[in-house]
Length: 248
Image 1 (tube, rainbow, N blue to C red):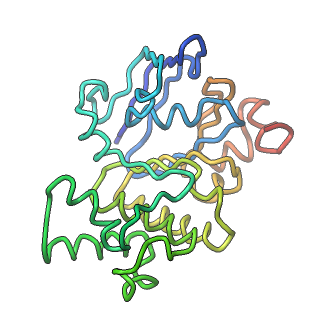
Image 2: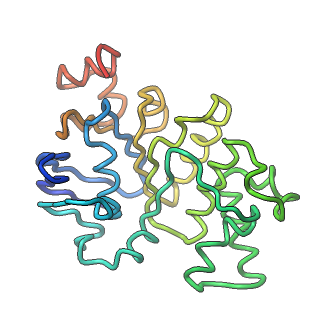
């Protein structure tokens, strides 16, 4: 089943063309790893999936980005961003308690209150693999958590509003190896229910968790294949050079 269908996607910010003729699909319940050097267009691609690029000046788009066969540009942006949640590179907890961080989006949408809200928060924290670490600290400030715990808290906050897709933009860039392993473990479990797109500068991470991997270079999609094949027998010599660390 196809979750996103992208056809001839071109994106500009003023005179700078960030994406050039990208055509690809994102399959439901997969982890799609997106790799490439700086300024390759991978984050622009990610932010196009929930229209965050539109918040930047001089943005222009050509081509189609379909979510379940509906062009994302025709969907209400707030509704789209609830369906397609995003976890950023740096954890961004709110200046609230652990509980209220997770409950924030749910309350904003007026979805649930009381006992039902308690259940949603608990389930989200469990799904983000942090419940056991915080269940006795829910009233404490989120800022008391470690960096790795804050990142998993942000994942829980995204999960609480029940998205269909989770976008990860280098979510482990500032984390230690143990925290990174916990975030990756959460991702592997989450794909049972969600579609995941992961932008990462860590090619080893892409290899560990990705079902398929897309390699971007200078705004172009160079190659997209099953992760094992792309890392062991890539079709393009530029892909081979990047995954072997010859440039990047």
